[in-house]
Structure formats: C-alpha cells, structure tokens
Length: 591
Image 1 (cartoon, one colour):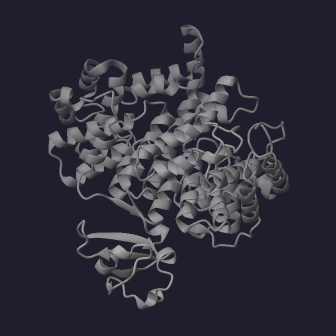
Image 2 (cartoon, helix red, strand yellow):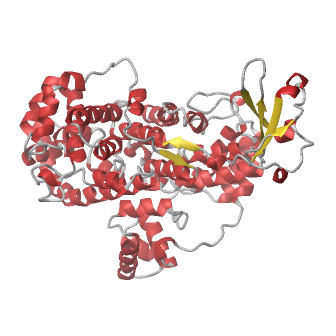
Image 3 (cartoon, rainbow, N blue to C red):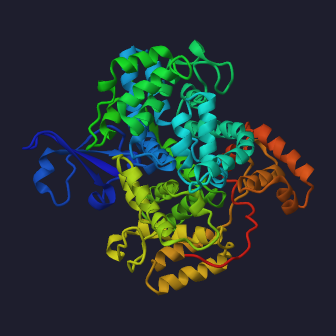
C-alpha cells in the first residue's frame, strides 16, 4: 500500500504534514519508482483542498508494510508478566510491583547499567516457565495448594520447604492428622519428579525468554532462579558472590513482595532477616531493611504500569517486525502449555485466521492484526485451573463461569499496553457470536468487525478438529458442517466461514525439519509433546518402545533439551504439533 506525505509550506497554522493514501487522493500520479524517496516535488494539487495547493509539495514513500512496525519490548514483556500473575493465582500486577521493588533495591545499591537491565527484565520474566508441567501439578496438588503452602517457603529452610510440599499434597478438606498421612504417602513420588520439574521449568523459561527478545545474560538469570546464596539450591554449590548481583536482588524482591501479601512489611522484615545468609545475600537484605517503607510504597488504588515502563534502564529495547510475531507466538505457546490438549492450538488458529483474512482481501494491516490477535487469543486460559480444562465430564456452573471469563482475562492482560490494546480487543471476542449468544460480553453483529468474526470462526474450526478430554476430534468435514449450520442460523459470519474453510483446505508445503530432525524424530517429538508415553508412541508408529526411545533421545540431543515440556515448546515453535492426534475415546460433545 503506497502512501504520500504531503508537506505544507507556510500554511496559516504553521508547518505540518499529512499522510494520504495514493489510490484515494492521487490517482493520476506517476508510478512510485519515479518519485525518489525523501525528495519533495512542487505543486501537487490536493483533491478537495484547493486552498492548500499553493503551500504544498509532495514526496512518495515506499509501501508501509504492516510487518515493519515496532513495539516496545517492555510493553510485551510486561503483558506477559501479567499473564504469569494469572497463571500462578497472584493479584493482577503483582509481578510488576515485584519488579519495581527490585529496581528500587538496585537503585539504592548503585548497580551498574548492565546489572540494572538484567534485574528489570529478569524480574518481569522470573515466572516465565510457570505453566510447565501444569497437568502433572494438577494431578498431584489441589487447585491453589502450591500457592498457599509451597510458594511461601520456596526460599525457606529444607525442613520448611518439605513441610510446605506435604501440606500441598494433602486433600484440602482432610483433617490435619489425615492430611499429614496423605502428604507423607504422596511425598516420595512428588520428590522424584521435583528435580525434573525444576529442570523443565528452567528450560522452558529460557526458551520463552529468547523468543521474547532477551539477551543471553537475562536468559541465564531466569534459568538460575533456583540457586541460593548458601549454595544449597539448584545447581548445588553455586552461591555467594558467584551469583550475579541481579539474581541476588531478584531473589529478595520476589520473595519479599510475595511475603508482603501475606503479612505486611513487619512479616517481610522478620522473614528476610531469618533467611539472610541462607537463601539471600545479606547485603541485599540490609538495603531492603533500611528503606523498606519507601521500597514498598505503592498506591493500591492505582496501576503501576506507567512506573514499570518508566523504570526501564538504559536505551529502550524495541521489537520490530518478525520479532513482534515471535514474541506474541511465545506468549501463545506459554498459554497452550497448560494442557497437552492445547499444544499448538494458538499457532494453528493464527495461521488459519491470517490465511482466511488474506482470502477476504482485508487490508494488509488487518491481516497482520488478525494473525497476531490469534496468537494470543487464549492467553487468558492460564487464569483457569488445568483441572477444569482437563475434566472429562460435564463442567459445573462455577467451572463454566471460569471458562467463560478466559476471554475477558485475555483482553485485560493486553489492555495495559497501548501497543497491544487493539490486539486485545480482537482477541477478547473469539467466543462472541453475531446473535449475542457468545461470551464474555454477549455482543451482537454491529459490535463485531470482520477481524473478530474471522478469529471466532478460525478458533471454532481448530477447536472442533482437535481432541478434548470430554470428546474425540471431529473430522474436518464434520467441523465444516457445524460451521455451515451456525452460519445459517445467524450465529457466525458466512463469508468468514467460507474463507476459513477454503484456507483450511489449502495444501501444506513440505518443509525441512528444524534442528536437523528426521521425519521419524519429528513424529516422535510431536506425539511426546501431546503427552504420549514412549510405549504409546511406539504403538502409534508401529515400532518398538526401545526404537521410539532411541528416536526421542536423538531428537532431544539435536534440539538441546532434556525434558518433555521443553520438547513440547520446541514442537509448538517450529510447527511440529500438527502431526498425529491424542488417542481419546468419544465420550460425547460439550460446546
């Protein structure tokens, strides 16, 4: 799309410039190639504005491609931080407050600019891996149990941490004595999986941070979050001055902000002093204790978003073009990790919605907006417990209410950022219907523009052809019939349905496998990412479990990961999740 800059020389209101579309305002101009970039040409008559003719000159500028935009990295990462709050069950903007505590500590300690930047981004991204192994956690722990019993003692003594895990393992309604017995009985299994979970969480966090545009020093910081000052964390014997100062600040700021929720600043001081020299650097604790009133000075009635942006140290980091897409895709994959049923869903919807938008000849910028909104449309899923998403039977009224609100949470997470608000307004409508029967607002056709209509249909189609815990996947033909019936009933847009179905029928070109994977290794990674065990993979592919395991280990080595969660993230990143499907029996339909 070509635009013309119109520069007004000495107009009555001063020097100004207009930006007008060529095809609308200058239909008789010479081809763009004859208008040198950056030069101005005399006496261009503006259609409908003869009064400006004698002051104007024009110059052509090359097509304004939608992909050549830029977004401030802190806005994207700050929005991602809000999503991690929802995933953990923390108050909205808790992670932003934790980051401000860290930056206030860093400022008082006089750290160098590089350490300040590490502290800033590291604190925003510290929980980037929190959706890792969400299914396993939901099977071991009741909803909210980890936040209530384990998070308060993450930096406690080994005995405190063990006690917290045991409490989290017990059934929430059990009497204390029964709960203690349950926790003790379930503890060995939880401990066996704990180390693998820590490794997986760190691997996933590092991979997501890389896709969000973070440098190696920040990624290393997030990966090393489980280290301790006394060397008793993970990795073992790494502590003291060996830990980057940014990590030492991050430890204190993260725990102190959480403990402030539980008991205020007096509680914070008591715990920080108790953990000084153990989990925490005594110097950082001393700085916190000295200025705790100012460091924790927040206006609870207002947002800290603006201050979070203002606190970014050094030169503003920007994401441009494809970097924006990579970052948004990382956010979508973060959300999809909450359940193996969702692996690859967001990326698939984005590909389908973008292709359908192009078929409808939407403006290039609208095509990009639809695709990007689709990447993050289910970000609010993380606010709903994995046990709800994975429930094989009918949902209760309360569970349905939580599910209905996930679209609202998506919109709210993206609404803080001026750059992402438009995407949020599209993404938040993916369950709306033209007749008002959708959610979360229940709006009708006049409030739903074509980008929103396309996203709703693309999401519905992909959801139907993917398996869910309560039903088997529909065939593409069956999904098409359901969409056609809904269009005939006036619930969804017929043009959007036609475009989505046409796009879904397009042949997928054969591509080289990433990381040098063979076709068989890619198939194994795809099935492992969807939650299948090695024996199930072998059965599905018609090979022995031993052979399947060999392919899996070869694939892990090529990818550079060692855990299922990291492999699932890799599979989503490189589009390997479309092969195969989960072996789930048809147990009936749920809308």
